[in-house]
Image (cartoon, rainbow, N blue to C red; front, side, top):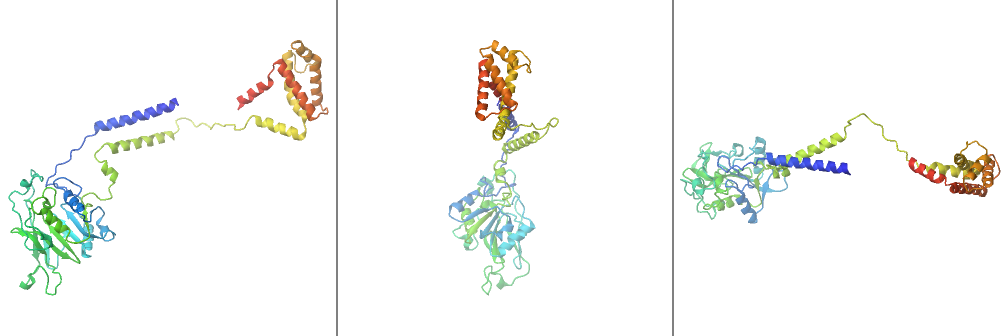
Amino acid sequence: MRQRLTIILTVIVILGALVVLNTITYVKKEKPLDTELAPNRSTYHSGPTGTRALYDFLSESGLRVIRWRESPDRLLTSGANIRTLVVIGSTQVPFSEEHAERVLEWVATGGRLILIDREPPHSLLPKSDDWLINMKGYRFPFADIDPADPKAMTQTVSAIQPVQPTLFTQNIQAVMPSQFAARVRITPTKPSSDDEEDYGTTEEGKSSPAPVVHVADEQGPLLVDYPHGAGRIVILSDPYIVANGGIELRDNLQLAVNTITSVDGLIAFDEYHQGRGVTRNALATYFAGTPVIPIAAQIILLVLLVLWTRGRRFGRALPLAQVDRRSSLEFVVSMAELQERSRAFDLAIENIYSRTRRVLARHAGVDYNSPRSLIASRVASRSSLDANKLETLMRQCEETINGGAINWRQAIDLVRRLREVERTLGLGMRLRESKQAAESI
Protein backbone atom coordinates (compact mmCIF):
# COMPACT_ATOMS: atom_id res chain seq x y z
CA MET A 1 0.00 0.00 0.00
CA ARG A 2 2.87 2.36 0.81
CA GLN A 3 4.45 1.66 -2.58
CA ARG A 4 1.20 2.47 -4.39
CA LEU A 5 0.84 5.69 -2.41
CA THR A 6 4.34 6.70 -3.47
CA ILE A 7 3.52 6.05 -7.14
CA ILE A 8 0.27 8.04 -6.92
CA LEU A 9 2.00 10.99 -5.24
CA THR A 10 4.77 10.90 -7.86
CA VAL A 11 2.25 11.02 -10.72
CA ILE A 12 0.39 13.93 -9.06
CA VAL A 13 3.64 15.86 -8.63
CA ILE A 14 4.62 15.29 -12.28
CA LEU A 15 1.20 16.39 -13.55
CA GLY A 16 1.33 19.47 -11.34
CA ALA A 17 4.78 20.31 -12.65
CA LEU A 18 3.54 19.99 -16.24
CA VAL A 19 0.59 22.29 -15.57
CA VAL A 20 2.81 24.90 -13.89
CA LEU A 21 5.40 24.69 -16.67
CA ASN A 22 2.81 25.09 -19.43
CA THR A 23 1.11 27.93 -17.59
CA ILE A 24 4.40 29.80 -17.15
CA THR A 25 5.52 29.30 -20.76
CA TYR A 26 2.08 30.03 -22.23
CA VAL A 27 1.88 33.36 -23.96
CA LYS A 28 -1.60 34.46 -24.87
CA LYS A 29 -1.81 35.61 -28.44
CA GLU A 30 -3.61 38.88 -28.84
CA LYS A 31 -6.41 38.86 -31.34
CA PRO A 32 -5.42 40.86 -34.40
CA LEU A 33 -7.43 44.01 -34.98
CA ASP A 34 -9.89 44.01 -37.84
CA THR A 35 -8.65 45.94 -40.84
CA GLU A 36 -9.79 46.24 -44.43
CA LEU A 37 -6.32 45.05 -45.43
CA ALA A 38 -6.92 41.65 -43.79
CA PRO A 39 -10.67 41.34 -43.16
CA ASN A 40 -12.48 38.34 -41.75
CA ARG A 41 -15.81 38.04 -43.55
CA SER A 42 -16.94 34.87 -41.75
CA THR A 43 -20.46 34.68 -40.33
CA TYR A 44 -18.87 33.45 -37.09
CA HIS A 45 -16.93 36.71 -36.73
CA SER A 46 -18.54 39.49 -34.70
CA GLY A 47 -15.91 42.15 -35.49
CA PRO A 48 -16.56 45.08 -37.83
CA THR A 49 -15.38 43.17 -40.92
CA GLY A 50 -17.40 40.05 -40.04
CA THR A 51 -20.93 39.21 -41.19
CA ARG A 52 -22.40 37.66 -38.06
CA ALA A 53 -25.02 40.39 -37.69
CA LEU A 54 -26.45 39.64 -41.14
CA TYR A 55 -26.53 35.89 -40.52
CA ASP A 56 -28.18 36.26 -37.10
CA PHE A 57 -30.76 38.67 -38.52
CA LEU A 58 -31.72 36.26 -41.30
CA SER A 59 -31.83 33.33 -38.91
CA GLU A 60 -33.96 35.13 -36.32
CA SER A 61 -36.30 36.33 -39.10
CA GLY A 62 -37.32 32.72 -39.67
CA LEU A 63 -35.43 32.24 -42.93
CA ARG A 64 -33.71 28.95 -43.69
CA VAL A 65 -30.01 29.76 -43.47
CA ILE A 66 -27.03 27.53 -42.75
CA ARG A 67 -23.28 27.82 -42.56
CA TRP A 68 -21.94 25.63 -45.36
CA ARG A 69 -18.73 23.95 -44.20
CA GLU A 70 -18.60 21.16 -46.76
CA SER A 71 -16.52 21.03 -49.90
CA PRO A 72 -18.20 22.48 -53.03
CA ASP A 73 -18.20 18.94 -54.42
CA ARG A 74 -21.10 18.22 -52.07
CA LEU A 75 -23.34 20.90 -53.56
CA LEU A 76 -24.49 18.59 -56.36
CA THR A 77 -24.77 15.50 -54.13
CA SER A 78 -26.05 17.01 -50.92
CA GLY A 79 -29.59 16.26 -49.85
CA ALA A 80 -29.88 19.72 -48.29
CA ASN A 81 -31.35 21.15 -51.52
CA ILE A 82 -29.46 24.45 -51.32
CA ARG A 83 -30.92 27.14 -53.58
CA THR A 84 -28.63 30.09 -52.74
CA LEU A 85 -24.89 30.08 -51.99
CA VAL A 86 -23.39 33.28 -50.57
CA VAL A 87 -19.63 33.90 -50.81
CA ILE A 88 -18.50 37.04 -49.00
CA GLY A 89 -15.16 38.79 -49.27
CA SER A 90 -11.70 37.58 -50.08
CA THR A 91 -11.83 34.08 -48.59
CA GLN A 92 -9.17 32.61 -46.31
CA VAL A 93 -8.96 29.50 -48.53
CA PRO A 94 -8.75 30.46 -52.23
CA PHE A 95 -11.11 28.81 -54.71
CA SER A 96 -9.34 26.14 -56.68
CA GLU A 97 -10.19 25.54 -60.32
CA GLU A 98 -11.88 22.28 -59.38
CA HIS A 99 -14.02 23.92 -56.69
CA ALA A 100 -14.98 26.75 -59.04
CA GLU A 101 -16.07 24.25 -61.68
CA ARG A 102 -18.25 22.40 -59.16
CA VAL A 103 -19.89 25.64 -58.04
CA LEU A 104 -20.64 26.73 -61.60
CA GLU A 105 -22.05 23.29 -62.40
CA TRP A 106 -24.38 23.72 -59.43
CA VAL A 107 -25.40 27.21 -60.65
CA ALA A 108 -26.11 25.83 -64.12
CA THR A 109 -28.60 23.37 -62.59
CA GLY A 110 -30.68 26.25 -61.16
CA GLY A 111 -28.72 27.51 -58.17
CA ARG A 112 -28.10 31.15 -57.32
CA LEU A 113 -24.53 32.23 -56.53
CA ILE A 114 -24.09 35.55 -54.71
CA LEU A 115 -20.57 37.00 -54.77
CA ILE A 116 -20.03 39.93 -52.40
CA ASP A 117 -16.50 41.16 -52.90
CA ARG A 118 -14.44 43.93 -54.45
CA GLU A 119 -12.58 41.40 -56.56
CA PRO A 120 -14.36 38.01 -56.80
CA PRO A 121 -12.38 35.05 -58.16
CA HIS A 122 -12.19 35.21 -61.95
CA SER A 123 -13.00 31.50 -62.10
CA LEU A 124 -16.45 32.28 -60.65
CA LEU A 125 -17.23 34.96 -63.28
CA PRO A 126 -17.97 33.11 -66.51
CA LYS A 127 -19.06 34.85 -69.70
CA SER A 128 -22.75 35.27 -70.39
CA ASP A 129 -23.12 34.69 -74.09
CA ASP A 130 -21.53 37.78 -75.66
CA TRP A 131 -21.03 39.61 -72.38
CA LEU A 132 -17.82 39.63 -70.34
CA ILE A 133 -18.08 40.45 -66.62
CA ASN A 134 -15.16 41.55 -64.48
CA MET A 135 -14.30 44.21 -61.91
CA LYS A 136 -12.99 47.73 -62.21
CA GLY A 137 -10.15 48.92 -60.09
CA TYR A 138 -10.88 50.22 -56.59
CA ARG A 139 -9.05 52.28 -54.00
CA PHE A 140 -6.72 50.12 -51.97
CA PRO A 141 -7.73 50.21 -48.25
CA PHE A 142 -5.52 52.22 -45.94
CA ALA A 143 -3.93 50.47 -42.98
CA ASP A 144 -4.96 53.19 -40.54
CA ILE A 145 -8.66 53.10 -41.47
CA ASP A 146 -10.83 51.71 -38.69
CA PRO A 147 -13.58 49.51 -40.23
CA ALA A 148 -15.70 50.13 -37.13
CA ASP A 149 -15.78 53.87 -37.87
CA PRO A 150 -18.53 54.61 -40.45
CA LYS A 151 -17.30 58.16 -40.99
CA ALA A 152 -13.81 56.99 -41.89
CA MET A 153 -15.13 54.20 -44.12
CA THR A 154 -17.59 56.40 -46.03
CA GLN A 155 -15.50 59.56 -46.27
CA THR A 156 -16.02 61.40 -49.60
CA VAL A 157 -18.73 58.86 -50.57
CA SER A 158 -22.33 59.70 -51.41
CA ALA A 159 -25.28 57.37 -51.12
CA ILE A 160 -26.15 55.43 -54.30
CA GLN A 161 -29.70 55.01 -55.54
CA PRO A 162 -31.22 52.12 -57.53
CA VAL A 163 -31.28 52.53 -61.31
CA GLN A 164 -34.48 50.57 -61.84
CA PRO A 165 -37.17 48.82 -59.79
CA THR A 166 -36.35 45.13 -59.36
CA LEU A 167 -36.71 42.46 -56.72
CA PHE A 168 -33.31 43.53 -55.37
CA THR A 169 -34.27 47.21 -55.01
CA GLN A 170 -37.66 46.90 -53.31
CA ASN A 171 -38.12 49.40 -50.44
CA ILE A 172 -34.69 50.90 -51.08
CA GLN A 173 -34.07 54.63 -51.45
CA ALA A 174 -30.27 54.64 -51.24
CA VAL A 175 -27.38 52.49 -50.05
CA MET A 176 -24.08 53.61 -48.55
CA PRO A 177 -20.97 51.81 -49.78
CA SER A 178 -17.47 52.36 -48.46
CA GLN A 179 -14.86 54.56 -50.10
CA PHE A 180 -13.10 51.34 -51.17
CA ALA A 181 -16.06 49.94 -53.12
CA ALA A 182 -15.30 48.47 -56.53
CA ARG A 183 -17.50 48.61 -59.62
CA VAL A 184 -18.62 45.89 -62.02
CA ARG A 185 -17.39 46.19 -65.62
CA ILE A 186 -19.74 44.78 -68.25
CA THR A 187 -18.11 44.45 -71.66
CA PRO A 188 -19.88 43.24 -74.81
CA THR A 189 -17.62 41.00 -76.85
CA LYS A 190 -19.35 42.03 -80.12
CA PRO A 191 -21.45 45.06 -81.12
CA SER A 192 -25.13 44.90 -80.32
CA SER A 193 -27.94 46.44 -82.36
CA ASP A 194 -30.26 48.98 -80.81
CA ASP A 195 -33.04 46.46 -80.46
CA GLU A 196 -30.85 44.02 -78.58
CA GLU A 197 -29.81 46.40 -75.84
CA ASP A 198 -32.73 45.56 -73.62
CA TYR A 199 -31.42 44.21 -70.33
CA GLY A 200 -34.69 42.43 -69.54
CA THR A 201 -36.00 39.93 -72.07
CA THR A 202 -35.61 39.12 -75.74
CA GLU A 203 -38.31 39.24 -78.37
CA GLU A 204 -39.13 35.60 -77.77
CA GLY A 205 -39.86 36.27 -74.08
CA LYS A 206 -36.90 34.26 -72.83
CA SER A 207 -34.33 35.49 -70.28
CA SER A 208 -31.69 37.67 -71.87
CA PRO A 209 -28.01 36.68 -71.40
CA ALA A 210 -27.21 40.35 -70.77
CA PRO A 211 -26.40 41.32 -67.15
CA VAL A 212 -29.02 43.32 -65.25
CA VAL A 213 -27.84 46.40 -63.33
CA HIS A 214 -29.76 47.16 -60.14
CA VAL A 215 -27.69 49.77 -58.29
CA ALA A 216 -25.13 52.04 -59.96
CA ASP A 217 -23.64 55.53 -60.07
CA GLU A 218 -21.51 57.47 -62.49
CA GLN A 219 -18.53 55.26 -61.70
CA GLY A 220 -20.32 52.06 -62.68
CA PRO A 221 -22.65 49.30 -61.42
CA LEU A 222 -22.55 48.27 -57.75
CA LEU A 223 -25.08 45.41 -57.91
CA VAL A 224 -25.44 43.22 -61.00
CA ASP A 225 -26.82 39.78 -61.79
CA TYR A 226 -26.72 37.67 -64.94
CA PRO A 227 -27.76 34.16 -65.99
CA HIS A 228 -25.58 31.09 -66.08
CA GLY A 229 -27.33 27.99 -67.33
CA ALA A 230 -30.57 27.57 -65.41
CA GLY A 231 -29.29 29.68 -62.51
CA ARG A 232 -27.97 33.19 -61.94
CA ILE A 233 -24.85 34.82 -60.56
CA VAL A 234 -25.24 37.98 -58.43
CA ILE A 235 -22.34 40.38 -57.84
CA LEU A 236 -22.29 43.00 -55.08
CA SER A 237 -19.00 44.84 -55.37
CA ASP A 238 -18.59 46.09 -51.78
CA PRO A 239 -18.62 43.69 -48.79
CA TYR A 240 -18.80 46.67 -46.42
CA ILE A 241 -22.52 46.93 -47.22
CA VAL A 242 -23.20 43.54 -45.52
CA ALA A 243 -20.39 43.68 -42.92
CA ASN A 244 -21.11 44.28 -39.24
CA GLY A 245 -19.60 47.75 -39.45
CA GLY A 246 -21.69 49.01 -42.37
CA ILE A 247 -24.92 47.02 -42.53
CA GLU A 248 -26.78 49.55 -40.38
CA LEU A 249 -26.11 52.46 -42.75
CA ARG A 250 -28.96 53.74 -44.92
CA ASP A 251 -30.76 50.82 -46.65
CA ASN A 252 -27.75 48.50 -46.65
CA LEU A 253 -29.54 45.84 -44.58
CA GLN A 254 -32.61 45.94 -46.83
CA LEU A 255 -30.44 45.55 -49.94
CA ALA A 256 -28.63 42.59 -48.36
CA VAL A 257 -31.92 40.93 -47.42
CA ASN A 258 -33.47 41.53 -50.85
CA THR A 259 -30.42 40.19 -52.65
CA ILE A 260 -29.98 37.06 -50.54
CA THR A 261 -33.67 36.15 -50.22
CA SER A 262 -34.73 36.84 -53.81
CA VAL A 263 -35.21 33.10 -54.32
CA ASP A 264 -37.13 30.81 -51.96
CA GLY A 265 -35.29 27.87 -50.44
CA LEU A 266 -32.30 27.09 -48.28
CA ILE A 267 -29.59 29.78 -48.10
CA ALA A 268 -26.01 28.67 -47.43
CA PHE A 269 -23.14 30.95 -46.40
CA ASP A 270 -19.82 29.57 -47.57
CA GLU A 271 -17.67 28.91 -44.48
CA TYR A 272 -15.56 26.21 -46.09
CA HIS A 273 -13.43 28.80 -47.88
CA GLN A 274 -13.37 30.97 -44.74
CA GLY A 275 -11.15 28.29 -43.16
CA ARG A 276 -13.90 26.61 -41.14
CA GLY A 277 -14.36 23.40 -43.08
CA VAL A 278 -15.56 20.26 -41.32
CA THR A 279 -12.16 18.66 -41.90
CA ARG A 280 -10.82 20.59 -38.92
CA ASN A 281 -11.13 18.97 -35.51
CA ALA A 282 -13.82 20.82 -33.56
CA LEU A 283 -12.24 19.98 -30.19
CA ALA A 284 -8.81 21.18 -31.30
CA THR A 285 -10.37 24.35 -32.68
CA TYR A 286 -12.16 25.00 -29.37
CA PHE A 287 -8.94 24.71 -27.34
CA ALA A 288 -6.75 26.45 -29.93
CA GLY A 289 -4.53 29.12 -28.36
CA THR A 290 -4.66 27.56 -24.86
CA PRO A 291 -2.14 25.29 -23.07
CA VAL A 292 -4.73 22.52 -22.79
CA ILE A 293 -3.63 20.68 -25.94
CA PRO A 294 0.12 20.69 -25.02
CA ILE A 295 -0.73 19.47 -21.50
CA ALA A 296 -2.87 16.65 -22.91
CA ALA A 297 -0.11 15.67 -25.34
CA GLN A 298 2.46 15.58 -22.56
CA ILE A 299 0.19 13.47 -20.33
CA ILE A 300 -0.35 10.99 -23.17
CA LEU A 301 3.40 10.86 -23.76
CA LEU A 302 3.98 10.25 -20.05
CA VAL A 303 1.43 7.41 -19.95
CA LEU A 304 2.98 5.77 -23.02
CA LEU A 305 6.41 6.07 -21.43
CA VAL A 306 5.18 4.40 -18.23
CA LEU A 307 3.54 1.58 -20.21
CA TRP A 308 6.72 1.08 -22.23
CA THR A 309 8.98 0.97 -19.19
CA ARG A 310 6.63 -1.43 -17.40
CA GLY A 311 7.09 -3.87 -20.26
CA ARG A 312 10.91 -3.61 -20.27
CA ARG A 313 13.21 -5.97 -18.34
CA PHE A 314 15.85 -4.29 -16.17
CA GLY A 315 17.75 -7.44 -15.16
CA ARG A 316 18.32 -11.06 -16.02
CA ALA A 317 15.32 -13.20 -16.78
CA LEU A 318 14.00 -15.04 -13.71
CA PRO A 319 11.89 -18.19 -13.86
CA LEU A 320 8.33 -17.91 -12.72
CA ALA A 321 7.66 -19.00 -9.18
CA GLN A 322 6.26 -22.53 -9.10
CA VAL A 323 3.40 -22.49 -6.65
CA ASP A 324 2.32 -25.88 -5.35
CA ARG A 325 -1.43 -25.65 -5.41
CA ARG A 326 -1.98 -29.07 -3.83
CA SER A 327 -3.06 -29.38 -0.20
CA SER A 328 -0.75 -31.24 2.19
CA LEU A 329 -3.73 -33.21 3.45
CA GLU A 330 -4.56 -34.63 0.02
CA PHE A 331 -1.99 -37.39 0.48
CA VAL A 332 -3.33 -38.28 3.90
CA VAL A 333 -6.92 -38.37 2.69
CA SER A 334 -5.98 -40.48 -0.33
CA MET A 335 -3.98 -42.97 1.76
CA ALA A 336 -6.78 -43.29 4.29
CA GLU A 337 -9.30 -43.99 1.57
CA LEU A 338 -7.05 -46.63 -0.02
CA GLN A 339 -6.42 -48.29 3.31
CA GLU A 340 -10.13 -48.37 4.12
CA ARG A 341 -11.05 -49.87 0.76
CA SER A 342 -8.28 -52.49 0.94
CA ARG A 343 -8.95 -53.12 4.67
CA ALA A 344 -5.21 -52.57 5.29
CA PHE A 345 -5.67 -51.73 9.00
CA ASP A 346 -2.15 -53.01 9.75
CA LEU A 347 -0.71 -50.32 7.50
CA ALA A 348 -2.69 -47.61 9.28
CA ILE A 349 -1.46 -48.88 12.66
CA GLU A 350 2.12 -48.98 11.35
CA ASN A 351 1.95 -45.35 10.19
CA ILE A 352 0.78 -44.17 13.59
CA TYR A 353 2.74 -46.56 15.86
CA SER A 354 6.08 -45.97 14.17
CA ARG A 355 5.91 -42.25 14.96
CA THR A 356 4.62 -42.92 18.51
CA ARG A 357 7.41 -45.46 19.25
CA ARG A 358 10.03 -43.01 18.00
CA VAL A 359 8.71 -40.31 20.35
CA LEU A 360 8.42 -42.77 23.27
CA ALA A 361 12.03 -43.89 22.77
CA ARG A 362 13.15 -40.28 22.70
CA HIS A 363 11.11 -39.60 25.86
CA ALA A 364 12.64 -42.65 27.57
CA GLY A 365 16.15 -41.70 26.53
CA VAL A 366 16.86 -44.95 24.72
CA ASP A 367 17.42 -46.06 21.13
CA TYR A 368 14.50 -46.63 18.77
CA ASN A 369 15.35 -50.35 18.42
CA SER A 370 15.49 -50.92 22.18
CA PRO A 371 13.16 -53.65 23.61
CA ARG A 372 9.65 -52.50 24.23
CA SER A 373 9.89 -53.60 27.89
CA LEU A 374 12.80 -51.24 28.42
CA ILE A 375 11.02 -48.42 26.69
CA ALA A 376 7.82 -49.02 28.67
CA SER A 377 9.62 -49.20 32.04
CA ARG A 378 11.64 -46.05 31.36
CA VAL A 379 8.51 -44.14 30.25
CA ALA A 380 6.52 -45.38 33.26
CA SER A 381 9.28 -44.26 35.62
CA ARG A 382 9.01 -40.76 34.24
CA SER A 383 5.21 -40.56 34.09
CA SER A 384 1.98 -41.83 35.58
CA LEU A 385 1.54 -44.55 32.97
CA ASP A 386 1.49 -48.23 33.90
CA ALA A 387 4.46 -50.05 32.43
CA ASN A 388 2.60 -53.33 31.83
CA LYS A 389 -0.32 -51.61 30.03
CA LEU A 390 2.06 -49.60 27.89
CA GLU A 391 4.12 -52.70 27.00
CA THR A 392 0.91 -54.62 26.20
CA LEU A 393 -0.27 -51.79 23.87
CA MET A 394 3.09 -51.76 22.13
CA ARG A 395 3.04 -55.55 21.74
CA GLN A 396 -0.47 -55.55 20.27
CA CYS A 397 0.49 -52.87 17.76
CA GLU A 398 3.63 -54.79 16.73
CA GLU A 399 1.67 -58.02 16.36
CA THR A 400 -0.87 -56.24 14.11
CA ILE A 401 1.97 -54.80 12.05
CA ASN A 402 3.51 -58.27 11.71
CA GLY A 403 0.28 -59.72 10.29
CA GLY A 404 -1.97 -60.34 13.25
CA ALA A 405 -5.70 -60.50 12.57
CA ILE A 406 -7.57 -57.30 13.36
CA ASN A 407 -10.83 -55.64 12.42
CA TRP A 408 -11.66 -51.96 12.06
CA ARG A 409 -13.06 -51.68 15.61
CA GLN A 410 -9.86 -53.10 17.10
CA ALA A 411 -7.78 -50.81 14.89
CA ILE A 412 -9.74 -47.75 16.10
CA ASP A 413 -9.27 -48.90 19.71
CA LEU A 414 -5.50 -49.23 19.27
CA VAL A 415 -5.31 -45.74 17.69
CA ARG A 416 -7.40 -44.29 20.52
CA ARG A 417 -5.10 -45.80 23.17
CA LEU A 418 -2.01 -44.53 21.39
CA ARG A 419 -3.48 -41.00 21.34
CA GLU A 420 -4.26 -41.26 25.08
CA VAL A 421 -0.59 -42.13 25.74
CA GLU A 422 0.45 -39.08 23.73
CA ARG A 423 -1.92 -36.81 25.66
CA THR A 424 -0.82 -38.23 29.02
CA LEU A 425 2.83 -37.68 28.23
CA GLY A 426 2.09 -34.28 26.69
CA LEU A 427 3.83 -35.24 23.46
CA GLY A 428 1.29 -33.38 21.23
CA MET A 429 2.14 -35.30 18.07
CA ARG A 430 -1.08 -34.37 16.31
CA LEU A 431 -0.55 -30.67 17.12
CA ARG A 432 2.98 -30.85 15.81
CA GLU A 433 1.80 -32.60 12.64
CA SER A 434 -0.86 -29.93 12.10
CA LYS A 435 1.76 -27.18 12.43
CA GLN A 436 4.05 -28.94 9.97
CA ALA A 437 1.19 -29.34 7.52
CA ALA A 438 0.26 -25.62 7.84
CA GLU A 439 3.87 -24.57 7.32
CA SER A 440 4.19 -26.72 4.20
CA ILE A 441 1.12 -25.02 2.72
